[in-house]
Image (cartoon, rainbow, N blue to C red):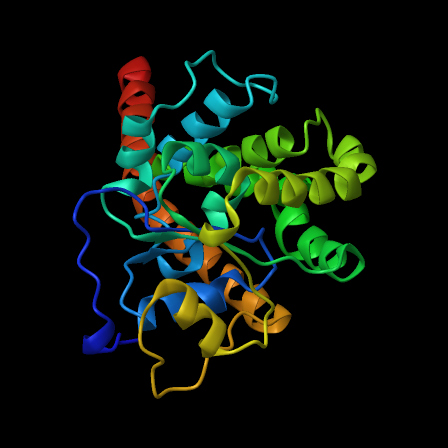
Length: 274
């Protein structure tokens, strides 16, 4: 979706301009589209090719931020330079995949504007559990997708998402996440609000439209409707499409390997009978 020329913002290499503090399934894709329309270079996981998302760095960020997350390798805490390499050198705004790291990003980019979007827990949790958590936690498909992504394509997407969520919820199992979910959710938003001066924070509610967002970001109100994206059915279809692409690419990579191993086995078997 094209941005409006009058709202073009050139990224000057000064780091993130907007930190979107709204967790997965709180309207992040619609907000990402809105930032793009307003001229901000914006990262959202579903607006990037799965192969373009920096999954390796995201996994490293999870390990650095939450050392107790299962299977984490020891790492030093991320510095401003690390966050710049992940997002800050390329993007003006970050949304869904960055949201669990909001507090770390706020510290790294003290001049960034912070947009807070929070849904009632009772409405948020069922959507988050089905559309996000279960897709990376439930077996066996999560494990199969993780294997295909990592070993055939070199993309640790499932591994990164598992570490992010275990770390964010301070849990060692899916069951523990279910127990802690409400308290962690509420604590996240309390901590974000406490960390940001009022003049740099906007409490935005989906449905508020352009006016409060544009006033906060000091840009012109565009003459297009506010985006509406990522309803549950569309989200599920998009995730399935991305998985099909990943499997297709993985199979294409695997076939030559399988054929090569088959040829080696045939040659070996022939040599034993010759």
